[in-house]
Image (cartoon, rainbow, N blue to C red; front, side, top):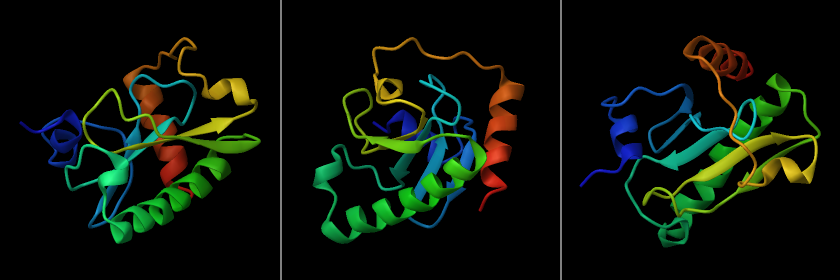
Length: 130
Protein backbone atom coordinates (compact mmCIF):
# COMPACT_ATOMS: atom_id res chain seq x y z
CA UNK A 1 0.00 0.00 0.00
CA UNK A 2 1.41 3.38 -1.04
CA UNK A 3 2.36 5.81 1.70
CA UNK A 4 0.88 9.28 1.92
CA UNK A 5 4.23 10.60 0.66
CA UNK A 6 4.10 8.37 -2.43
CA UNK A 7 0.61 9.69 -3.11
CA UNK A 8 1.93 13.25 -2.79
CA UNK A 9 4.73 12.51 -5.29
CA UNK A 10 2.19 11.06 -7.75
CA UNK A 11 -0.06 14.12 -7.36
CA UNK A 12 -2.89 12.08 -5.83
CA UNK A 13 -2.72 14.25 -2.70
CA UNK A 14 -1.95 17.97 -3.01
CA UNK A 15 1.16 19.46 -1.43
CA UNK A 16 2.99 22.76 -1.18
CA UNK A 17 5.96 21.84 -3.35
CA UNK A 18 9.30 23.47 -2.67
CA UNK A 19 11.59 21.55 -5.05
CA UNK A 20 11.71 18.42 -7.15
CA UNK A 21 14.07 16.50 -9.37
CA UNK A 22 13.98 13.02 -10.88
CA UNK A 23 14.71 11.30 -7.53
CA UNK A 24 13.59 13.64 -4.72
CA UNK A 25 10.70 15.82 -3.68
CA UNK A 26 10.55 18.58 -1.05
CA UNK A 27 7.32 20.05 0.29
CA UNK A 28 6.01 21.96 3.28
CA UNK A 29 5.00 19.93 6.32
CA UNK A 30 1.26 20.51 6.86
CA UNK A 31 1.76 20.18 10.64
CA UNK A 32 4.77 22.47 10.93
CA UNK A 33 6.81 23.37 13.95
CA UNK A 34 7.46 26.73 12.32
CA UNK A 35 7.35 28.73 9.13
CA UNK A 36 9.10 26.92 6.29
CA UNK A 37 9.17 23.46 7.95
CA UNK A 38 9.93 21.29 4.93
CA UNK A 39 10.08 17.55 4.31
CA UNK A 40 12.56 16.06 1.84
CA UNK A 41 11.79 12.56 0.54
CA UNK A 42 13.07 10.16 -2.07
CA UNK A 43 10.46 9.46 -4.73
CA UNK A 44 11.28 5.78 -4.35
CA UNK A 45 9.25 4.37 -1.48
CA UNK A 46 11.72 3.09 1.10
CA UNK A 47 10.65 2.95 4.73
CA UNK A 48 13.83 3.82 6.62
CA UNK A 49 16.36 6.48 5.70
CA UNK A 50 19.31 4.23 6.44
CA UNK A 51 17.93 1.52 4.17
CA UNK A 52 18.63 3.80 1.19
CA UNK A 53 21.66 2.71 -0.80
CA UNK A 54 24.71 4.89 -0.26
CA UNK A 55 24.42 6.80 -3.54
CA UNK A 56 20.72 7.57 -3.05
CA UNK A 57 21.30 8.70 0.55
CA UNK A 58 24.28 10.89 -0.34
CA UNK A 59 22.42 12.53 -3.23
CA UNK A 60 19.39 13.07 -0.99
CA UNK A 61 21.55 15.01 1.46
CA UNK A 62 22.90 17.16 -1.38
CA UNK A 63 19.31 17.82 -2.53
CA UNK A 64 18.32 18.65 1.08
CA UNK A 65 21.26 21.08 1.28
CA UNK A 66 19.95 22.99 -1.76
CA UNK A 67 16.54 23.21 -0.10
CA UNK A 68 18.11 24.33 3.20
CA UNK A 69 20.06 27.10 1.45
CA UNK A 70 16.83 28.38 -0.15
CA UNK A 71 15.03 28.12 3.21
CA UNK A 72 17.69 30.20 4.96
CA UNK A 73 17.45 32.89 2.27
CA UNK A 74 13.63 32.96 2.43
CA UNK A 75 12.96 32.65 6.17
CA UNK A 76 15.07 34.74 8.56
CA UNK A 77 16.81 32.28 10.87
CA UNK A 78 20.09 31.51 12.60
CA UNK A 79 20.33 28.05 11.06
CA UNK A 80 18.30 25.41 9.30
CA UNK A 81 17.87 22.41 11.58
CA UNK A 82 17.82 18.85 10.32
CA UNK A 83 15.92 16.01 11.95
CA UNK A 84 15.35 12.41 10.98
CA UNK A 85 12.66 10.65 12.97
CA UNK A 86 10.92 8.43 10.48
CA UNK A 87 8.29 7.15 12.88
CA UNK A 88 5.17 8.90 11.57
CA UNK A 89 5.19 7.79 7.93
CA UNK A 90 6.89 4.60 6.68
CA UNK A 91 8.72 6.48 3.92
CA UNK A 92 12.24 7.87 4.40
CA UNK A 93 12.21 11.61 5.04
CA UNK A 94 14.25 14.47 6.41
CA UNK A 95 12.78 17.44 8.27
CA UNK A 96 14.32 20.86 7.54
CA UNK A 97 13.29 23.68 9.85
CA UNK A 98 14.45 27.29 10.08
CA UNK A 99 15.68 27.82 13.66
CA UNK A 100 16.28 30.73 15.98
CA UNK A 101 16.95 28.44 18.96
CA UNK A 102 17.59 24.71 19.44
CA UNK A 103 14.24 24.41 21.23
CA UNK A 104 12.52 25.25 17.91
CA UNK A 105 13.30 21.69 16.77
CA UNK A 106 11.42 20.04 19.64
CA UNK A 107 8.68 17.90 18.12
CA UNK A 108 6.59 18.13 21.29
CA UNK A 109 6.17 21.89 20.68
CA UNK A 110 2.70 22.95 19.54
CA UNK A 111 2.27 22.80 15.78
CA UNK A 112 1.66 26.03 13.86
CA UNK A 113 -1.56 26.62 11.96
CA UNK A 114 -1.52 28.26 8.55
CA UNK A 115 -4.26 28.81 6.00
CA UNK A 116 -3.90 27.42 2.49
CA UNK A 117 -3.07 30.93 1.29
CA UNK A 118 -0.37 31.29 3.95
CA UNK A 119 1.15 27.91 3.01
CA UNK A 120 1.15 28.96 -0.65
CA UNK A 121 2.86 32.27 0.19
CA UNK A 122 5.52 30.50 2.27
CA UNK A 123 6.18 27.96 -0.49
CA UNK A 124 6.45 30.71 -3.09
CA UNK A 125 8.86 32.70 -0.90
CA UNK A 126 11.13 29.66 -0.65
CA UNK A 127 10.90 28.52 -4.28
CA UNK A 128 11.89 32.01 -5.44
CA UNK A 129 15.29 31.44 -3.80
CA UNK A 130 16.34 28.66 -6.18
